[in-house]
Length: 341
Image (cartoon, rainbow, N blue to C red):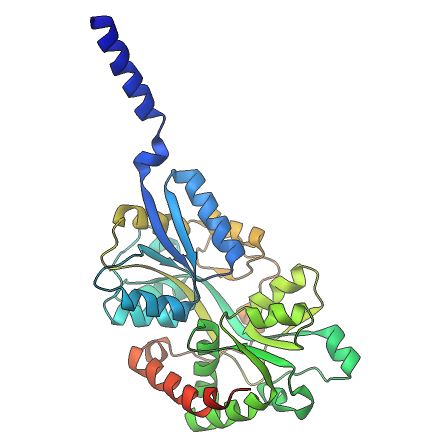
């Protein structure tokens, strides 16, 4: 009898020891980067920690809308990547949680400022400049001139050749809208966007979709973050990246823990892990060529460098404000979206 009881106890102990992943629990993650890097990050984290990650890929605007709608009963624990403006809006709305990672001291100043400006409710994980990528073969075949400036995109020869995302769903497109307002002034920027609308073939839901369409030959040019254009070049497509001559805005891709997260400890584990230099150095393996936020992370040789680009002094506080975003998007819907092709 004693032997049987002892055997059962030993068996139970062995069985429990064999289930570290189950004991580690799970994590509900929204990823707002390209699906390839989302899957790589998720797989690496699961392998390293044993925590099961339930990952959903949504663009930044869609994520902001989702966590706002679910504020009373959050279904998400952590939001990784995507443009910083919606993360800042979520922070100002009290939708995300204050957290000071022990990794903060290792980060670039722009990543720390993102954290400080949000009351430590978000943090910068990467950065990238806005521009466009165009298909050199299509342009050569059609005799189109390389557009080097924002003004060049209004050329009548580009009618039906340009794709960009819808700023309601895409953080990339909202960054473009906010950048143009800062470069030109609001009224002039909307005059520009109304003229540009005549050359737009499609407003996509995802920010990187326009340059992927250009890579496939479905469009001539996509207005995107430059690292998304570089990723298509790295895949072997005839895509050339351009930083506009008048200047351009940039993103600080960010990360936030959702207030009311059901798996808070696991969310903090992801947060700290995602800021490690070795994790950020691996992003290039998924053809993700942003500038990493950890000072010790390896900068991909393909990454567009800020020092080579005419950057504006992007006002993250103003354009990360929920009321400002709402006003700009309502005006875009009224003056541009309503007459979209």
